Image (cartoon, rainbow, N blue to C red; front, side, top):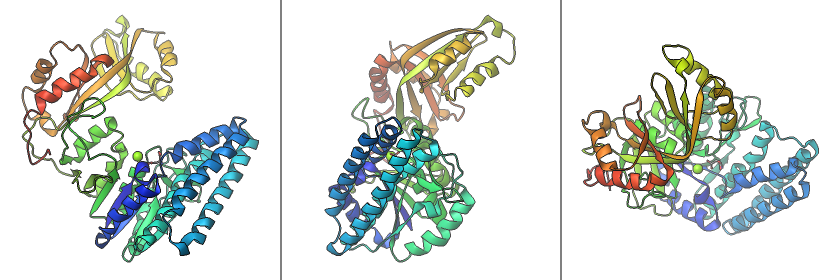
Length: 456
Ligand code: ASP
Ligand code: MG
């Protein structure tokens, strides 16, 4: 058995879903369980509908719902067998009728709870998975739909629910695995339900996580994440072109990169797969012939010191200085307690005796955080900074990596440095404007020669 997950762009239209069908058909002998995202930008649209409904825009919300219905009906009708049309119609009717009821209810309540957010946003995956099941049949694939909410059991932390693994794995093993023996199983990603059957979601981008959970639950031999890029690259193509495909990477390295290249892989994705030692592949549904990136449990021997350079823009560097910190204890606790209270994750940290510098990428509560910090410290904030992160298992074994980094960077001003506790990353903060030259210089330094076993 394998799990094949297709993201929003891979199922955004009839044409895209036909590509998916032909990819899946070629792999039927491997007994695929297919996990799909909502079609295209559907999740965003559903959230916009919810916002409009509670914000006094009831009619607008209903109009948007009709738009969404037209979109699904138009694309789906292009790829469903004649004899399945009544089934498609009833699927659309049932879902959109419910959705309209929900919208009207929200408009009356005027309040959007996390539970309602989940109820609304679940429609994307519920629809896409049903539609993809019908589309597969037209392509001669025997397909069966499983409502993910019957098998993926979570806690009740709506919009960020955590899977209850033992129960989920039991259900996957007992229901999904036997079905997959004789047909291609199709389920929606992202969604689940509590033990009492209330719909939940795993958080934005959560379909990759669903795929990984499904793979772990059924004991898949491989989890394939089909997306719209060729795999992981040696550098972010949005920052600097000319990166090479990384063919093989370890789970630990991929997890470091996931935080940065969030577009390619949801960070939590790899965890269930790691625990069960199941390799994860990143593949391109537009170019299925490309072998992609294979993420494997163990270390990947490689003659290059660095596997990939990741980056993150639009971060803020917060410098906290206080002479009261000199020889005092409890200071860091006070600082982090504030970030904790404002639910703002801290990414990089560097400390000296009287100062702490740290970076955050969620700036929404920054002003309030600074106001609190200023009760006991001098605070400066520098926005528009960027993190550049070199990732590779070999960084810890290769002497002189930092020397090469600073030599390559030349006159680029480095604001902060940290070598992660995992020892497989080296992160730097630079000015946003310096990001591109920094990445280009580092890429030229570390990827002038490539280990052919690891890079394409
Ligand atoms: N449809 C959900 C989202 O847009 C989940 C996913 O695509 O992974 O966040
Ligand atoms: Mg995604």
